[in-house]
Each structure stands twice: as structure tokens, then as C-alpha cells.
Length: 202
Image (cartoon, rainbow, N blue to C red):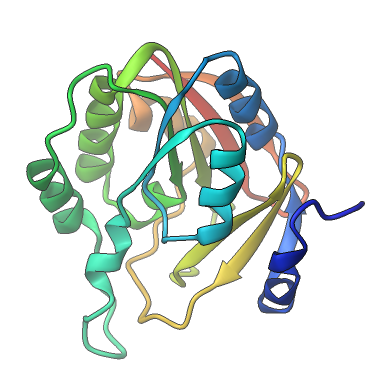
């Protein structure tokens, strides 16, 4: 498979690439809009901004997990408080975004904080918009912080960052619908690596 962005090749040695189904759906949804607005809640990634900009998107980035990078080494922090800070510090209008990238933010949130995040996403999405989220394999105890680089529409690079671990949470498949409500679980894909990708809608 040819790589449309040669500048990202050095990153291939810092992670593992996997096929993605949900990213393809997400991209096709964005292409249906003239100048879609996209909010990326993941770790800052220049290649993702480039990829989305090339699609004609107006990209907003709010690295929610970045607020946890100064925690003491060896401790396991939770991102729940930081999600609350994100809520209060940003004044986005309701129905503002065509797409929101949550990546695996839910993996670092307890149920109450995760449900609060879902309500925020529901408020920020346009009626025709969608959000993309990833969930760790059931039973996973990993708490490393990951960045997801879009290599192309069908492939993501899972890059482990040299940051202190965060609280890890692996939700069961039966819990996902309640976790993301009031968002609707539109598409769900179980990947060969055990991860689950989901597309969420109003």
C-alpha cells in the first residue's frame, strides 16, 4: 500500500499500524459537507491535521490528555477531572462540529465522566454530524497513552507516547450503548487486534 504522506514514514518505527474501518466512514461523512468543522480530542498530531486539512476540513484540536502530562512519574492519574476542565474552558456553540475524534478517551474515564463526555459531544455535534471513538479490548489492563496517526483512510498507526500512565478502563461490549448515550451507536467494528471502533451520531 502506497503512503500518500512520505513525511510520516519515520513514525512507523514508533508504533504499530492497523486497518481501520471507522476512519473510512468518518472521512466519507466529512466529504459530504462543503467545509466541515472537525474537533480532535486526541494527542496533538501534525499529520492528522494535514490529512484533515487536505480534505477541506477546518480543524480544531483540544488535547484533553495533555493536561495529565505533568503528573508524578509512576502514578496512575485519571482524565475525568481534565474533561471537566475542557468543558468549562471552551466556549463552542451547540451544533458546531460536523465531526469529533474522541480516539480512546473513553478508556481513561470512569462511567460518570464518560457519560458526561457523551452529553458534551451530543451537544457539540450538528444533527448530521458523527463522532469516532476507539475502545480497548475487553479485559485489557493497559494504561499507556496512545496517539493515533492517520496514515491513510484505511490505516491508523497506534503510537505509544513516553508519558506517565493514565487510569485504564476496558468496557464490555454490552456497556457501550449506555456509555455513549444520548449518542446513538451507529457503526461498530471489532478489529483483528481486539480493539473496537465505533461511529456515534445524534
